[in-house]
Length: 631
Image (cartoon, rainbow, N blue to C red; front, side, top):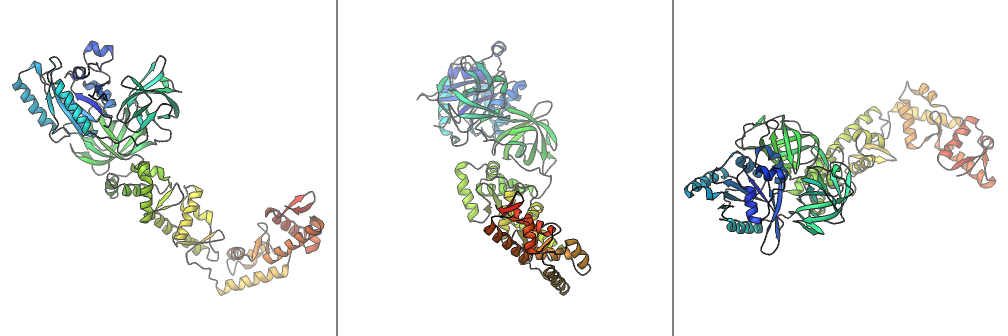
């Protein structure tokens, strides 16, 4: 049997807490004020004992309109709803609002309980039941069992208990395999145990001794103890009400609405893409740019509703929207939420998160609808592919794409292999993937950049790799952008030779005038020997006939010339001859001095120093005292 949480819902004073007491013999109201006033203010917790000794958690929620926020703090963990309607009053405002909230939270199963049946005649109960059926028509409770009860006389309690046993058996949650996540709905100190938090374990499994993190905030703790239904345990699983004793945290470090989860398992966001449904019967329609209270888990934060394809949502309609949050939240794909009107507080809608980490969207863009359709679909491969595609600018880790698309660790590797096999994505390394469409777009962008470069610097073999990387992916990690350039070369968009990048198929083409200038420059260097002309001299001499700077760069890239300093160039053949002099001298004499080297190559001090310092930079030699030795 899966662990299941039963949650009450219904109008104030309709007998929810009395019903729970009749079922369990335990009073869910724990506050003195609740007992004095006879109404539930805070969430109450107890359990239903099964014949085999297993226990199902029960959350008793407040029914008063002023405490709907408290109700919402517990409603997110409900698997089986217990809609309570008093026979002497029938459907009331909070009955309708709670029913709407349960529907918005995606609860699939429930039981309708008519309470206080001892106070009215059966004919009146018949009318109440008929009215309830009208109100739940079209909802998840349309075909739910309806049971008449009286907590005072006990009538119907055993039938209700057996019905709950049967319904619990039909529910399968399948959340144990997910990472541990617990929205905190209560924090307190207990003598001998320290800081205690309670909540519904909505996902995963937790053991005593596990290390956890509090979101938001960078606070870590160790699980010192686990209590479930007043019994000490060593493990808790999804669908259970738990109390965790935390070592390393004070009560002041925590508050209702925080989320307890494994370290680095949740990501912060200030935007969420959602499928938003407007509640039927609300006085306030959901409108674009509306400020609302967002309820997620046990947390309440303020947000703006950005409707992407409309200005107002018709009651009962579902639309695409982006919620922009006024503070960071920690949500996951597929999470449910509720929104309430800013003031006065009234539930107006809710829905499901289809992307917890989206980019900022613009309204009325044709791309919105197909992207939402994919992200809301059951096709996990398509969702993951789209999340990778949308992460192109940051080249985000694939773990982020999986988080956005709701891909579990169990499915991740198989889906990646599938997307690689059908050539949808390419893995840059073991952490980052790039979508084929992104690679194609970057290939086109790189081609445009290189074409402009070749037009402007037609005599150069190519652009420096780091320049292309900076212009193509200015915000990306250097190592990742380098890997992208490698992929573009494999895809045939460009060629890389000696660190220079050229458009695929590009070759330097020289005009007759440029050929003549090159011949003259080479001849000039050949005559000059170890006292070559400076670059300024070359520019002045040849710039009227050709672009001397590009020609010199061409000769440097070809290896004809070597740049010793910004102003001193020398034919590679002479540089090699100079090195042979240095090498043989050090081999025979153990060192070579500047004067000795200058005399051997018959050069001025200026050029001799330039050559020796060039060899130093190449790590062939080093200066020790007044002489060079091998490095």
